[in-house]
Length: 328
Image 1 (tube, helix red, strand yellow):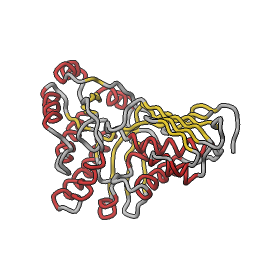
Image 2 (tube, rainbow, N blue to C red):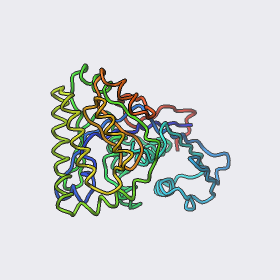
Image 3 (cartoon, rainbow, N blue to C red):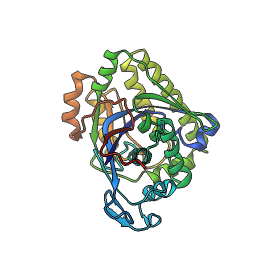
Image 4 (cartoon, one colour):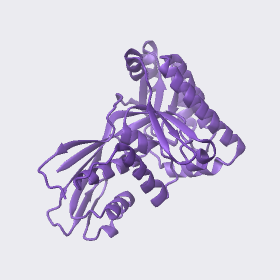
């Protein structure tokens, strides 16, 4: 048996600029970090080598991998010609919560299958191929940030160049400031999940509108400013940029926020948070806040939502267990 783990991510600023319709014209950038919550995938030869068993939120047992219903499993297994195996997936976080679960799964699946075939593949290649699977082959209306965040791991400033090339550089901070940032970020579950595709499809269409395009360009500027604030260990400025970016993000498409989310956000700000945002495309999932220690208990009390503890992680997609050798 082989087991991989691939981290989920938190995106701080710049989301939406990783969509091709935007970065081809202006270039894009995102500041994000991976966290110690993971998608785990295990693989081993199935008892009946003529069949393939997949275990996720459903179970699929097929004799022909072309009949797999799960879109990502279907595409990747067919592309890589892998059958006669049992693959199980389990995750620390449900899908539809804004932590990049779909792309985390795709990166993890590619990594798992390459390991099973005995092939070393760089993290950059895993991210690039995951983008090809989701965006080009399956036509998902998404960008490229989640795949790179999951594959590479760490706190990174990721650029999306006009020619389609993606580059990532770690954000350099003093250790003390890095740990304060980690401690001052609080994550709360809104209690709802959502499908991102509808919101992202609208956002993609809206990119051609002058005001939406301009706001997305401003968000790219804020992402750069946020990177510089962190490298100067100015965490208060980081918090205020987080707030400014959220205000701009809400203008990009309908459904990104709603009255319930707006009300919770207002309570958090009144309780002492310096800034925050809803993670992912919007509509539900997790609310993130930057809040200094002296205000954190008041924020927790006044918000009244389930807190989700996390830490930063730096490894990206990793092979964590190798059983008996059976490389193919």
